[in-house]
Length: 334
Image 1 (cartoon, rainbow, N blue to C red):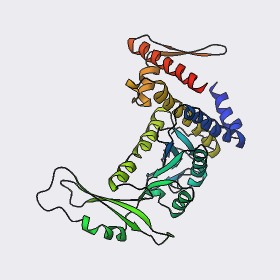
Image 2: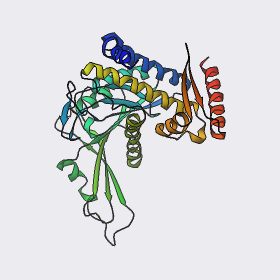
Image 3: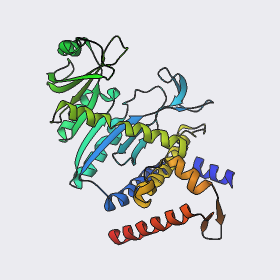
Image 4: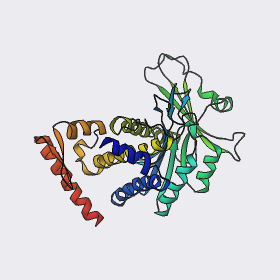
């Protein structure tokens, strides 16, 4: 059975139309969830990660930042932690490489549904061509900006340590100003945050380029929420085996990535749409270990798979709540 599955992955699914079909299947799955529960203001988070390899996999390369031989996939999430798109890349490409293959299509899809789109990303995505593409599509964005001497001179008055005894609590200062880098066609708003921490000699300084309005605190607070994308990637690795890319051929590993993304999304949709609110904040690893793996048995019949779970008060109450939510979603979808 295992050899047949591996042959299916290595031969049938690696064909171009089938690989595209896996991406379309993932998008159709998210589309079903959006029809039930979709905000009018969509937040997109783009991030990348490393997938270490331990052989001579095609197009795997040593990455000096991660200090290992790896692949370097690019992932796009929404605020509900659904993985909207993914692309497997060689290990030595820059973090923002191929953003134009994932981001514009999702923006156009959401704007076609009448949704407002906001984009967040780390400093690796601070590229003028990305800003311009977002501005052309009237998309708001907050992107971390690498520090330089000119930016730090703009916040020179904030870098002076507060007078008096050092505070045990961090002292935080903000500033907003216009800035135009040499590669930019026009000036853009930059929000700076300077933090003084007890026991540290130098302040922590961060810059964000944005076209959002609002106060400096609001912009920084909104940007900081992009940490959920990093947590989603961690869950995908731990609960959905996104790191198991052990095929020799690069195309075969592209195929292997997509079932992991689908498995992650199924788990995330289960968590946020079907589970009772009382345990809706469980991690995917906890759901797998406590509800499926512990006391559970998968039985295969001719046409169906049955998941048999050990009876307990938690299991009975949990699945009763899940069935009620699923029935309600079927009514909404109908």
